[in-house]
Image (cartoon, rainbow, N blue to C red):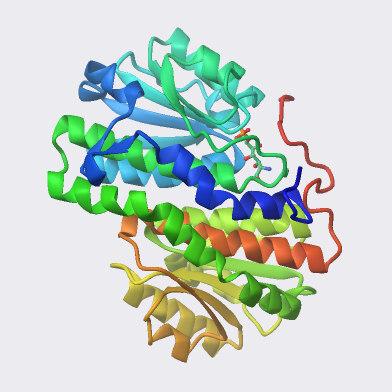
Length: 366
Ligand code: M6R
């Protein structure tokens, strides 16, 4: 049932061409010029009148939430906050009846996320679920929502669920923006058309696999890794670091790239490699200066760049090229090399990637 792959994790990484196809099917319509999400279309008033959006989740789903918040603020102009469900539920949070609370959970069974939505419902908020497991507790207890439809995820390290969550959040942000008129039809079409190309773009990105496998041999025995990214890719840096630590047991930290000079730069030496997610976007120049700072301190740099970039390859030790996409979609594509890097390093260390020590697939304890 691993479909010829040695591990569920690798199967689930490679399956993302199909899972994203299933995730977007019937939702990005009219050749990419319109978004159809029943959770939004059936409750327009809730979104038009929303004072705020609060996103609650744990782990990888929380990282997807951080990307989602940026997408929603950018496209739908609704103030959005992201909370760890475990903190939110005990923080005596201010929840208003005109809030929309979005709960993100692959399993739909995470105890803290379930408790957070119960709190939100008691306070009269409208609760929207983004789940994978159909009929799960969170899916049942939310007012409405959108399934990510990526199929069962067996590997403990979440991969295809993450890209499915971010894809749904992108469609959600566009759908609310479309409803509220906060984005133009040209903007919707620009992102929408590229969403339809995601399965092909993911297939192209997966071709990095042999290169990443070779690269992993160089870094198998390091003790620390730094991950940097900006904008939509800052949460991706957190996610890349989480992936590596949970399956390879290598300590890794993710930071917004510009924060490096406020402390973490002190850690950099030739023993500590830095992964920099640096697609060719608005913040490209800024990230280039971060790479120079790492290099100046003897650190090695693995950079994820847009195909055709000539500046970063001249300074980084290793370059992983991803296809060009609109900025909003770059975290989905950039997540793939991060997943493969964690996978290969863990395999080379001899770790059990599908069932890492101390972890369970679904955290139903508090
Ligand atoms: O099922 P959920 O999405 O609610 O799970 C949340 C976290 O437990 C989960 O994402 C965890 O962090 C994964 N092991 C990450 O790979």
